[in-house]
Length: 429
Ligand SMILES: C[S@@+](CC[C@H](N)C(=O)[O-])C[C@H]1O[C@@H](n2cnc3c(N)ncnc32)[C@H](O)[C@@H]1O
Picture 1 (cartoon, rainbow, N blue to C red):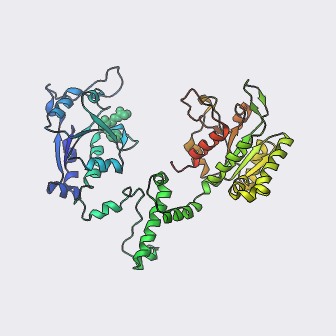
Picture 2: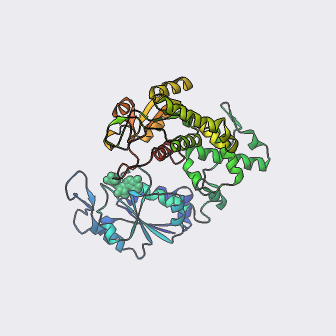
Picture 3: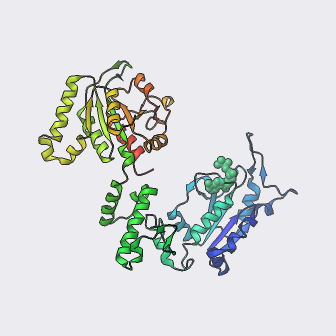
């Protein structure tokens, strides 16, 4: 496989290309690297490859003429990849795809980056190696080169190593151990010493699933999983739900706004009680408080909940009973706060939600997730046209509206609850 690397620092690659397995692959001719320096294609006596940005501002920009000439000097470029923080983040599937090419051309930027018109002149695929800014594309190019080259048949001693590694089968690899059997009081899991290959394989699969669930749960959405993997994952997940148990929800019916912006009280909605209870149960949350100052409404709600938890509803649908058992009908947000305090022994952090304006947002999803590790959080959702400002003001923070960059933001409160809870407790982050 041929890698053409366009770089103003060809010497950067010297040591990397001569050591370890990559060095061996280069010696054997399996991997060929050609370094092309845009400076060799400059026409001025300073051999300049950069100039000041149009529009002003700090830093320099890599100019087009030397880069275009460098690319045109290649007999065959193969696919041209521009390393850039704006690119699609490199992953295993991309590395597999690149490893199937006969040749690739990697362009390493420097300074503030490359004149954007390069993309008009050449067909480029832009690739990033992560949400960080590097000084130049050289480390990124090396990163990509190694990820693709090691997938070439014969690159590794055992080709099966590639098939068992992290990402290859959609999950992370299991943990490894080697000699000594005991070091500073740390032993090796006994099963690995047992010689029982079936048990070792089962232990490794569980380790692989456990590490994926802990470190990269979003991979499980796409990973091929067997029925026995699902049994293991459900068991593992049960021991990992402390964060979600710290998350509580309050659905406030007063004080909320009506469509004229006036403060008032809104009636209970059966669907909100059911659907948010089911969300709370699905995500293993600590509890769901339905807050209304109207006694007859609370009685109505309690009757409804009893029908499903202890009445005829339960006989027909135990799962619904399980979800509705999380519902508490209380007089006010203060009573919900007291309920969480009593249940957890800690004062909950109040996090408000609003569809009204991005300007009111003071807390990010990441900050709430962080808080959930330390203390209970009570997510406060409003019915009607949203929470009155007096409620939002007493919250420690308010989340940004869902789809805040869209002009239309009119979700039902139960849909909003599901989306917010998934952002906080879902498997994708
Ligand atoms: C200092 S960076 C330019 C950063 C640019 N001004 C920005 O803020 O997006 C210079 C060069 O390093 C490379 N580079 C930096 N970070 C990268 C990343 N995360 N992935 C791939 N290439 C990167 C690119 O080739 C880029 O043109």
